[in-house]
Length: 361
Ligand code: GLV
Ligand code: GLV
Image (cartoon, rainbow, N blue to C red):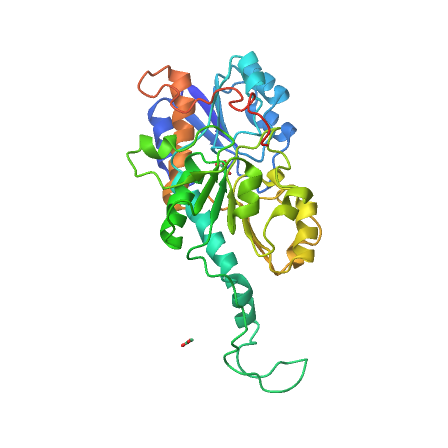
C-alpha cells in the first residue's frame, strides 16, 4: 500500500479494512488490550510515516498527537464515534489535519439503549434478575429467617407504569429525537406529554430530514421545566463546557422523587458524586447509566446502589451500527487522503459547533 492508515483499536467487520486496502492503503491495527491508550502509546503507533488515523473516544486527541501526526505526513483523523469531546478540532486544523466523526449510523441504536434503560429502570429488571439468580425466588431465605417465602409477593419489585407519563429529553438532536419517537409509542403519549428542551438548537431537524413523522412534542421553556415536570428524563447533549455537570446537586433536587434519569451521552454531563448522594437519599429515584464521569471507573458508592443500572458504554453496540461506524471512519480518512470528491469528508465535523451555545437557563 502507498498509504499507511492506523487504527488504534480493532473494529468490527471487515468492510472498513477492505475499503482501505482496495484503495492502496496499508492498514495497521493496534491490538493492545489496554482500555485507554496513552498519548505516548499513540505517538509510537503513528511512527515516522502515517497518512491517517482512526481513533477512539477514550483517547486524548490534542495538540501533541496532531503535531506528531503532522510530522508523520498525516492528513486525516477520524474518531470512531459521533461525540468528539476528546478531539481538539482547532489543534487539528492548525496542523492541516481534517477531523471526521461517525454520526447517523448510531442514532437508532443509541436511542434504543436509552429506551431500554428507561424501561429497565421503571420495572426494576436488573434488581429482579439479581434476585432470581441468587435463588431467592423459591425455597428458603438462606441466612435470614429460615422460613419459607411465598412465591409471589404482591409488593416485590413494584416499579412505575410509564403509560401516560411525561418524558423529558435534554438535547433534542438526532438521538434525542429518535428516543422521543420510541418513547412516545411506549407511553402512548400525546402532546404535551413529551417535553423537550433543545439546548443545541437542532430541534427536530434530523427527523424531518429523514422524512419521518416528527413526534408531537412540547418544547419546554427551559431545562428546569423539563427536570421539574418529567417522569422519565433522557440526556442527549453534546459534552462541552456548557454541558459539563449540567445535572448537578441543585438540579437533581428539583426532579420528582420517583423520576427516572437516563444518560447515554457523556459521563461528565452529570455530577456523579452528587448523583450517588441523591440516589442514597431517594431510594425511589432511579437511573440508567451508559457513561461515567471517570470512565471506565465509577464514583465511590455507585456500584452499591440498587436504584442504579450501569452498563459499560454500549449504547452504539449493535452489529449493524458498529460496523457502520467503522466504515464511516475509514471513509472519512480515505476521502481526505485520496481527495475523492465522492467520499470527500461527509462527516467532517465543524469546529466546536457549540462554542457559542448559551448555558441552559
Ligand atoms: C459514542 O459514545 C459515540 O460518541 O459515538
Ligand atoms: C400476575 O401474574 C397476575 O396474574 O396478576
